[in-house]
Image (tube, rainbow, N blue to C red; front, side, top):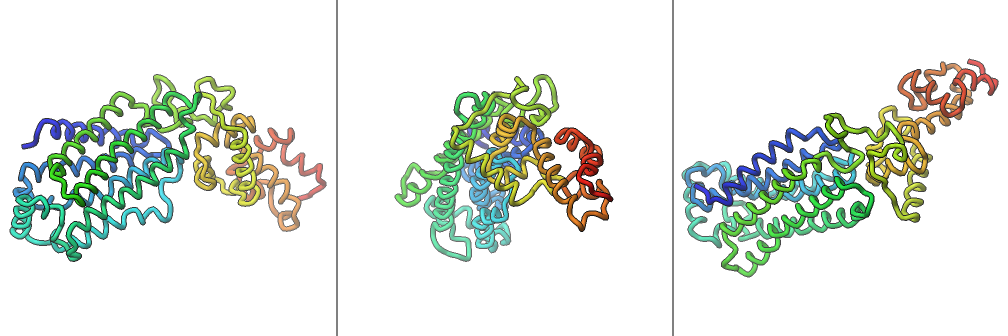
Length: 395
């Protein structure tokens, strides 16, 4: 039914989507799920494209015009995957739903066609396949503006690609020496995905506006096929990119991930060194300090390094080495320092005198007595009770 290249691409696409779903929880930021959706959109677009190319769409009218839904979604999910890779913990923002409005608008406009009977769909499909210009004009919707949805899809995609390029440029320092070979490969994988999406946009814009003869169903099928094949080969030959940027690394010959916080970076030879320009390092440290002093996020018992990454918009792979090297601590120990100081501060307040030390510790963000006592002894060299006695506070 299909030509060899699209057939190979469809098979590889299915394999890669399955692999991504299997590995969706292997990286802490779970970005593989977003990537799997983006690649599935490409896969589905190719499938629908080949149904049109082979005219098999006449036998499966339910798929008609549905490929454009995936077209509206593919780059939004690519952008979310890229952002979540660079900034783990920021999987969704409150305005991310805006990325899906064009796809929703398309579905609403084409609702009469999608809900019509097969006889009507087949008549429209036959007319569209016989006339390429009619096929890209999409006359079946309520809007009735020839070519609107295709042009809008390409313009919308171009806008998102600008945001995608901005993300890449802002994180280009990952390519600097010392960032690690796995980070290097993942960064280039993101660049490769971005470049592969460009032929899906610009030929379409010029092809529609200038009515170029080479802009056909066959051309789209070839571009989509190349996209899937290159993406699949990259993942198959560099599977470790599925674990994300460090510190989300994997211990060799083990299924367990290496928790970078277990040991300071300067003591852990398994993790590559990471450096920032002095000015950028000082700005980052100042930003972290101001946020901790003003917002006091450590009062949240479940606060994580990914939450901090999201709140101050600095990627984890920068935060963790800074905490490890500059503060000579891991994240949890660093966070507990703030909690210890806050405990000492509030323990002297009048409204706290009726509470136990454990209750005050929970107010400071500690989860349990053992963690609190150990952290306090590490910071002050004595137990909380003994320290309180030195302050002449009675409970």
